[in-house]
Amino acid sequence: MAVQQSFPFGGELLFGDGSALLVPEFLTQDEADAALVELIRENAWEQQRLLMYGKVVDEPRLSTWHSNGQTYTYSGSARTPQPWTPLLQDIREQCEEQTGHTFNGVLVNFYRDGNDHLGWHSDDELINGSEPLIASISLGAERRFDMRHRETGEVVSTPLGHGSLLVMSGLSQKCWEHRIPKMPRIADPRINLTFRRLLSTH
Image (cartoon, rainbow, N blue to C red; front, side, top):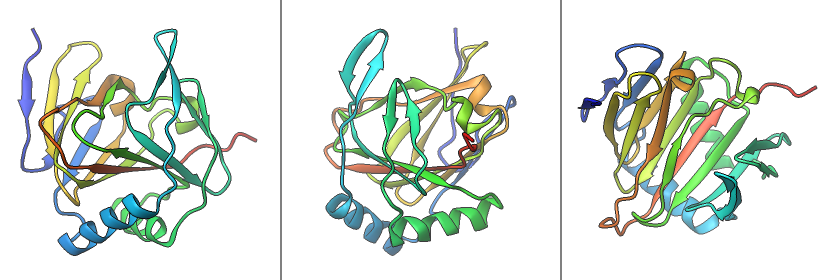
């Protein structure tokens, strides 16, 4: 039976097979508040239809993909890029300074309430590279984030708070799956920005 560990205070979440480093309060309260309001009001939200277990279903959240013209395909859906906004560029630069890594795309997910969720998956598409570094910013309602080891079944859980940064790297996408489970009692929205560097398709 899997043992579930909980890490509410940040730091390294994984015991091995990759890294998941949580930095609480990476953005200031004012920065995070302003970003949440701007994104909810001004982002051109889309609802994708995804291929899941052989069926086409509505994605249980809204989202947008932003890059310098590069498409991103996952779960059978090719995302048409939207341009970078000044806000997204600013947060990207802060993540690049923190991680020492450059990013050329960001997937923005909008969880309207606790019923919106993200199922078990890994960001292991070939275009992400074999050991991608992904910087994930959380805004709004605190939601639980679970990681499950592919071989041992061990589950690691942590709350992702308003303005926090989670950096996944190394073997984390190869050896672990992750999810944002349903939390129906939560009425407030959450936005998640996952900055990544896609490999060239040329």
